[in-house]
Amino acid sequence: MEESNLRDQYDYTAQGEGPDSWKVLSLWIFPIKSCHGIELKESRVVSTGLEHDRQYTFAEKRFNSETGKGGWVFITQRQYPALARVTTQFKTQKDRAGGRVLEVGYPVKTWLNRWISMIGETRKTFELPLEASEEELASYPLEPVRIWKDVVMACNMTVLVPSDFAQSFGAQYPIALFRLPPSHFREVFRCSPRKAEIRYQPVIAFADACPIHLINLASVRDLNSRIEGSIPKLDVIRFRPNDSWNRILLGDKEYYTSCRKVRCKMPNVDQDTGARHPAEPYSTMRKYRCIGEGNKLNPCLGMQVVPAAEMGVIRVGDSMRVLETREHYYIDQ
Image (tube, rainbow, N blue to C red; front, side, top):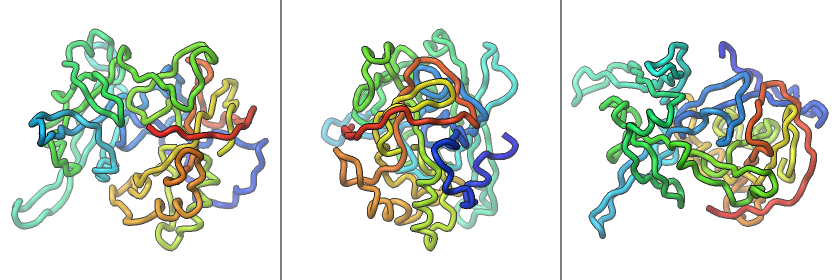
């Protein structure tokens, strides 16, 4: 997009608008988990949520000193805030199989002398298949990857990643790139509507818990007003997702808000610079947003969402209406 729909997010004159004017202001996907995302005008809703969202993740090999064996564990900006500077964008040309291509960009430091001083920074890119067939994915080895408590079999596609990529965000262990084939998508159960209720089984690839995250800009502005001395402009994109909503209408499709989104310290990372603030906004959120029944130790902001139908489309400008409310209870991972 040439101009972001969040360009006026710091203009507070729009506050006070009532429910009749609620609408989708901005739409984002993050094709590689915890890297910089892509803003869209519209997106298809598929079985895993917004199309192409969190299909890939980077993982590091952690070694168990007791067993002497290693295993792949997903990584995020929690460990490596500089992942925020790894960008993604769609390319117009197709790959050899006729599918769309995802271009990944990353910073490379230029040294006058590796022992003396850095004199600048350039950016490199590499490409990943965006629309990979089952046949194409089958050409990559399946290996176990841990994401939270789940261990899934995913395609190891590290062969597509340049050898100097891991240096761009300061990796401390061996790094690999993984993509989940559809046959290994993770089924969503906790806090979410059951298959008998919505007539399909919600699934995710490398999202944390639910297919879609929803966040209210007014809630972010309220938080920003409390921390202006530390962070004058709190970008809503720091939050990768009201409190009592249960069923909503977005455009012409229904969605279930399964539970509140419990927050970690990842929103402390500036998404432009990759720098992590030592305290905010997490510290302030803990003072007034620890409201989730089931987890009163961590703050909540935003909602986890499951589509009521397996397919659909969400567009910027779509109206939003609350159809049903209820009290939520968060079930830990």
